[in-house]
Amino acid sequence: QVTLKESGPVLVKPSETLTLTCTVSGFSLSNAGMGVSWIRQPPGKALEWLAHIFSNGEKSYNTSLESRFTISKDTSKSQVALTMTNVEAVDTATYFCARRNTGARDAFDIWGQGTMVTVSS
Amino acid sequence: DIQMTQSPSSLSASVGDRVTLTCRASQSVSSNLNWYQQKPGKAPKLLIYAASTLQSGVPSRFIGSGSGTEFTLTVSSLQPEDFATYFCQHSYSIDGTFGPGTKVDI
Image 1 (cartoon, chains in turn green, orange):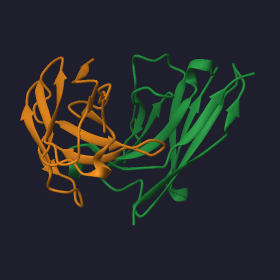
Image 2 (cartoon, helix red, strand yellow; image 1 turned 180 degrees about the horizontal axis):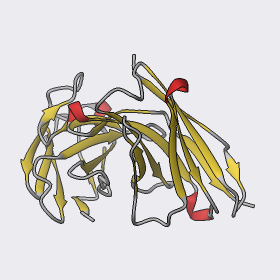
Image 3 (cartoon, one colour; image 1 turned 90 degrees about the horizontal axis):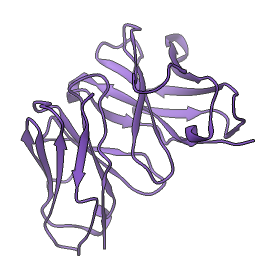
């Protein structure tokens, strides 16, 4: 069974650095065609794609956002991390990790449950 | 960047109704269009990929169509569990934008 699970702090202060971790099971992060993205959703709003890491380690970021995001992975631990620097109140959202599957025409076929992050002093 | 729009933003329907949701892209995404269903407090669930391919385990009452810039998701007979918000998303490029969503309620 393929699963993804996000973890990280629930509350962070403005200007701090936030690191979220996505732990996957049921597939390897080095499997060709299997990459992982981070996607967020502010309360009551739409989904916003943030970053993606490919099976070969290449990375891609949402260019509409400031370059505050860094995505990385540890294949041996089956984990993908997202680091966000200098967080602001507008970063308050539920953060999801999701598998992007080339076998499903690059759709996000499996999602984590999401982790809610609040940015507040 | 490719922008996605959805219409209507919300609709009210009854069990058994046939409903059609529309998604438009600001430029052609070929058939690289996906539909997701999201219920409150839950992660989105993939329903249809490549515009018209049903994801495994998804009921056949969900029907996707379209190509280029205009796409539709039809639910042939709404069931109680179908009341949710539906998002489209293109996967034409790596920065696959999501639409703003259509909320389907009773």
